[in-house]
Length: 177
Image 1 (cartoon, rainbow, N blue to C red):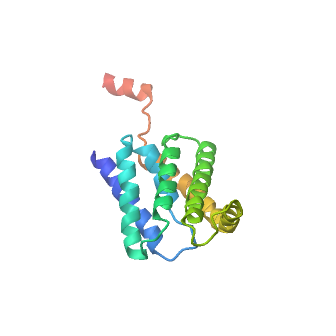
Image 2 (image 1 turned 90 degrees about the vertical axis):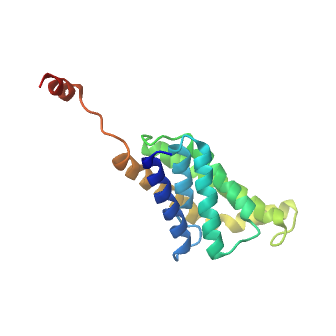
Image 3 (image 1 turned 180 degrees about the vertical axis):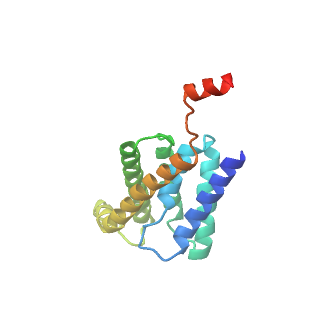
């Protein structure tokens, strides 16, 4: 991993972990945005997955391991996959749409896991519908955070990571000197 990638990995790891550990509204964290960006930034997807697993395991160590970890982790893995459809130079509308879809994927996967566990809802179609309906308030907050934070991370990356193009005229003048 190059120094810049290591720096990005470390920054994303710290942002993800701290966003779960500081007091916050339910599901309003940087986690989804970090994983969407990781899916876009790290061309070696194993690095993005390592970021996801390490930040979730470290933060779960402090806030407590839980029965829905598999479905939550699977939902975040879907967010990494969604991030692969973006680049650091993607436009805001594309980032907005991808973050919204990623948030929806997380909602579908994680709530299915809550239902499938069978402790909160009966394992019936009616129980599944109840689980998704009861999850809507959490989805709203997560979607707002995912979309807003994802746009913010990509905008920050555009300013800090993308090298500005040097106009050919400036290069030609430099060559003549």
